[in-house]
Amino acid sequence: MAESVDKMDERNEGSEMPPVLKFLDYLSKLKHLDRTGWIRHGVRKPETVAGHMYRMAIMSGFVIDDPTIDINRCIKLSIVHDIGESIIGDITPHCGVSNDTKNRLETAAIDQLASLLPGCNKGNEMKELFEEYENATTPEGKLVKDLDKFDMIMQAYEYEISEGRPKFLQEFFDSTHEYFQNESCHPKVKALVGQLTSARDKGIKFSP
Image 1: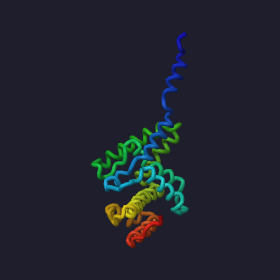
Image 2 (image 1 turned 180 degrees about the horizontal axis):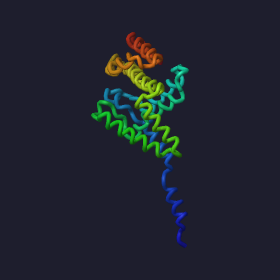
Image 3 (image 1 turned 30 degrees about the horizontal axis):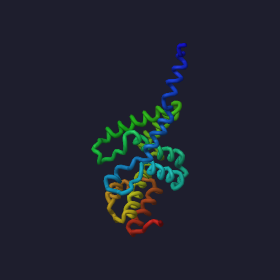
Image 4 (image 1 turned 180 degrees about the vertical axis):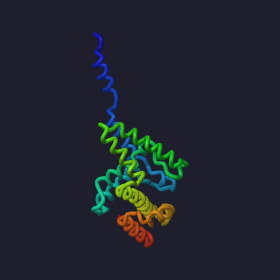
C-alpha cells in the first residue's frame, strides 16, 4: 500500500533537527570560542565568548546598583550582545574587517538565530536587544557597553597576574582610558575602573 502524504511529511519532519535545538547548538559554540584579542596576545588559556558574557550578566544583575536602570534588561543585553559570534566568530579591529562589514555580518547572524526561536516575539526581542546594545540608545544599552569594556580590562589584569607578566596587556588599558573618562560612562562603572586601576598600579593580586 502506498504511504500517505501525511505520513511521508511526518517522517521527513522527524528527520530534521528542531529549530530551537539548532539555536541551542549555536550557543554551545560560544562555550568553546576563545576570544580573539587574547589569542593575538599569546594568552595561554584565553577566556571564551560565553565566559565573557556570563560575567557581564552577573555584573549587570548583582554588582551594579542603580534604581533607575532596568537590571533584567541589562542581563538580557549582556547575554545577547555577542551571540552572533556563534556564527561569524569573534571579529576584532585587528582582523581587517571594516565596522560596516562587521555590523552587516552580525546583523545577519542575529537574524538567523532569531528565526530559530519559537514564535516571532522572542526572535524580535533578540533583534531589538542587539540593536539597542549596538546603538547604545538607552541607559541600559549604554551601561552594558560600559560593562563590556570594563570586563575586558578586568580580564586583562587577571591575565597579567596569572601569567606573571606585569603590564603586558597595557594596550587594552590605553585603548579604553579615554572612554572611561567620558561623562557618559556610568559612575558605578567608573568606580570599578578606579578600584581596578589602583590595584593594578600597586600590584595587588587576587586571592587564590
